[in-house]
Length: 639
Image 1: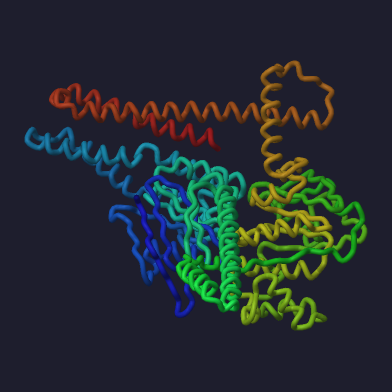
Image 2: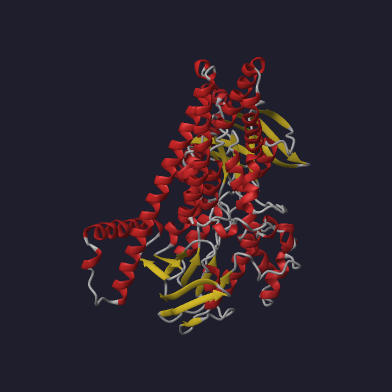
């Protein structure tokens, strides 16, 4: 056991956040903490990392256990570059390497009396260097940066110039490279695209330490964790399994609790009626029977009423008017910012009633595409057209349409001045803003709360074409489920950007993958997209393997030409992958030989033979030079 929480409680005045939170985390275990926004998940992380004190209970973490904590909002003001920030994790290795090089220079001048103790110290440092992965830190850095979506051009950017999301990715990368015994990750997928999230899933599944995650990404949790700690009404319940298993078990357990409580209450009422009737008979035998039943009722182990579930938002989206069948046409769009090409040849159509998801890596221009559709940006080429009676409603992930100076109440009132105070309050209550909450300023709200205000405004607009940019960002799981239901029952049309794969699976009827060279359409949800994409890649590989280049027809259609070009690119990618693999194998082989030479140099028989020792030392020096060349070769192959 690497972490234990027993009856942890935390209050702020009369506001009880956590009460009797109990769970254990085993070595190498991957677990998640879930609950609605405001349930106390981040508070618990801060207690574990000693940023907050707890009021009651016991927290046990062994003294030698290291903890790495990724918070949601990070502002790194470092003047270092992205790559230098990663290198800072390995400063102890650099010092070790420097000490080893200094000692190697002194070896030839050692006296016989100094030799044994000197070589013993060198052996200890060398072992420490190897155990710290001194030979592989560069490849580890590049692997993590690439996995988190950084291009090589970004390695040299100063961290202080990056966006908030990029800074969070830098911190996450540094954290993963440092390999603490326990990783605490608070919403690690918030600033990652789907490809990077998939990489992180693989990384965490293979991580040798323990991992505790707060996340609203249900697909991510299904693929990474084997335990769920559910915090509800301040209390914790542990479920062994992934998120989907937890949902099924929780629903079944709550239904059983409610039924048991209802059945017992029904039985109590029945017994009370029988006792009352027996007493009304007012005979000796009936009174004795009544008393016997009363004693049995007093001895009954009465169940507590299950606590109410935390408040959820509840709403229904209803278009004011129906649009024509053709909702949106996008034809040959292209867009660049200076020399930075985002996309070209983007064409697709949206029909009335469709629910369509747009996916693609960060920086490909998904939000820019939305702004072009809405007319707030002009493309370099191509055109878009909205259909007859189409009334779009836009959800901006940055919530620029909200005024930070307004209260929540005023934000709705200013947008819809004809609504009464009571009507505004009823709408806001549906989005879990009650009593004095409605007078909070927009600027003081969390990302999830701002998202709920934006959704309230969209609902009131009664648009018939919803254009949603990351609508699930900052929403808790329960609110996501309500939004899924609202979209699925919506009579209008929905086009949205999302990296929430679970959400896409639940709502999308069609998936558009945006790339620099256009859009690829998949007639299904995210799971369908994965299946079809894998199928296309397998077919392309089979066809490419079976047809020599000289057999390719000369007169082919543009579509076929694109397909063949794609196959050629895939072949190049496979060749590149083989070069990388070959370089990595040679690096591993060279590192193994260096380690073997280190061991031989400390063999008593060999260390007494100065000629043999020099021979080994020269070979090691030559291999270390070769290793640097291999690193450069590996970097070139990855560029």
